[in-house]
Image (cartoon, rainbow, N blue to C red; front, side, top):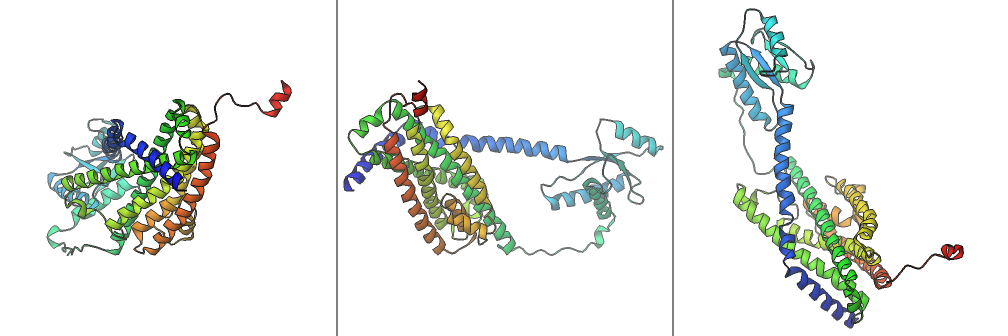
Amino acid sequence: MTDLVRSAYVIGRRDFAATVYSKAFIFFLIGPLFPVLLGAIFGGIGARVATQTEQPRVAVVASGEDFAKLAEAHRKLSQALGDRPLAELVRVPPEPNVEEQQRRLLASSDPPVVAVLTGGLERPHLMGAINPVGSTAGQIALLVDTARFPQDEAPELAVTAVKQAAGYVSRSRAITAQAGQMILFFLTIILAGMTLSQLIEEKSNKVIEVLAAAVPIEAIFLGKLFAMLAASIVGIVVWVSVGALAISLLVEGGTDSLPTPAVGSAMFLVLVVAYFAMNYLLLGSVFLSIGAQASTVREVQTLSMPVTVAQVLIFGFAAFAVGTPNSPLAIGGALFPLSSPLVMVARAAELPELWPHVVAIMWQALWVGLIVVVSARLFRRTVLSSGPARRRWWKRASA
């Protein structure tokens, strides 16, 4: 057992140094920056396009005084609704023939409008290609009512701000739980795939056979698994540090403005790293055993596809635990070993108790040991197989 651990340590130190001290590791560290930038750019473009397409434009045929009241009501409602699109108002001076003006405005494309409001604030009439009980008609009715209300007689709403409220805390913790699950899932998938690529490269170069002549096969398996885990944790530490620095520089209030998980920020980070390690060891063992059976990248993609799809389904199953950490579904997800890390990292964001995490980590460690042992044996049986595959008995009989 001591020789196995010593050999695994030698292999792990070799792979860790070859990974961390290579030029490719720099690109590995900055790799997640590109999806974040692309997501921010295309997310902003999509939000702008969605706002422009969802925001209807209504022509208002009214006097300057009535339109000023409507514009003031529009400003107040827009400020209250925040990012939700409110109908845009365009003033058009009234003409003698109002009906002809309505038809011309609806048919004109400069500017294109969906409806025309006439009659001022006394007898408002809305005509256009809209639903009479839809959101646009409702918004215009609300604007008219707000503009009609005497502003000097309007009672002022007294507002007292507090730092926390139960509803706000619950919602922010649910968002933190979802973010923790997504980070755990994507990091595990990406980094387990890197382990596969490295294994296939060493198999094609016959490096595995050279190592197997010097150390036990199980030591190669364990060394590679824990070396990539250590390199991944280095990457996580770098990403968290850079993210915290960026938030401190770009966001008002810095990291203090972020929602605080139920177990505390420091303990939550510790649990995220612990559950990532468990999730990676579980999935990485499976991917390494798959890589041992494949000799080309195409075979790896074919064999790993079912595992990846299953992991996506498990991630979807674990997402149902967010918001209801004590439900039977969440407890079942915590007991199932492959979804347990994802469910428990969400629980850490929503509930303050620590003893369930101690039990969960011990339970996951038990399954990690079982899966690693089985995967290591499968790795041993398949990693050194070379040459043409043996024909099945029915093929030999027909030959």
